Length: 425
Image (cartoon, helix red, strand yellow):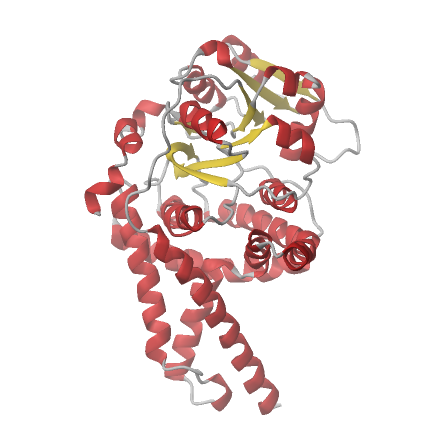
């Protein structure tokens, strides 16, 4: 038994070290000022889709925000999908100049964001490719930087087919839970998304603030039905040979839950969706990677099977603690404990760097690190429980109540668009 435990703990550490090498190599390319693609005259036509279920408290602010984007009005339409709403979501959207599509599910039908989007796409029909060049997706609680469509226009004219914008938080200072979310955003946006774009690897769609070329959307189809439809669609596009691209200069601000319990429910849904997509698409991506020597497909495979940095940090911390306090032979580290500590210090130093560069110094760095550590460890049971319950596809809605307008977000859009990151480089 001791031999089995020793071998298992050794294998766990070797796997963690492999993924540490993978993550750190990529993250090294996230430092410095991100380049910006050349501005082009507005010409692309956009359909903006906003799935919404009982979002009367927040949808009005988003529609006002979208109608005020720095882009010609005649080149984009805003469509709110009032999905099984029992409140005034549709009425508010119409009053503010958006198109409202009201969707009511039949008894026994599955509900949730993927099904609402499918309904809207079916209703729009052939006009999708006849009238529009790109489809942009936002959640009803979002706010968007005014240059968003300008940047998407630039990307489509460059030839990009799937683009994710910078994901930010509109309520990072509410409490330690929202602070943890925001800190994770800043870190992943730079150490993962920006870094991978510089390496020429595929990026990840984050569920909101992304744009899809309508031709690609029609080719792939909207068949994503997992709890993380964004991740599933990303992998479907990769299997078609089309990776997602990153736009660091347009931002979408997302509302994060203030309740720790609500955050656990949300993260459990994300983790279940990740496992579901992993089992469904990882073998296909590996097959494509081998058959076509496709490095992008292989990178997508690695992304699906890796435990993620949150789990990586937490398990590394546990190994570091065990190696110091335990005298049990099989719980000893296979590498000097200083290496584990160095990895964690590098990670958290990177977190502070991204907060200084990308958060406009809005947040307390010490509180952010402490809250992130707690957040990381709370993810471990959710991560493993989601593996055993990945078949549960019940969509549990996250309540949105923070009625914030764009003017209340204390980040200057002009600073963001100009690349304020350079101040700390």
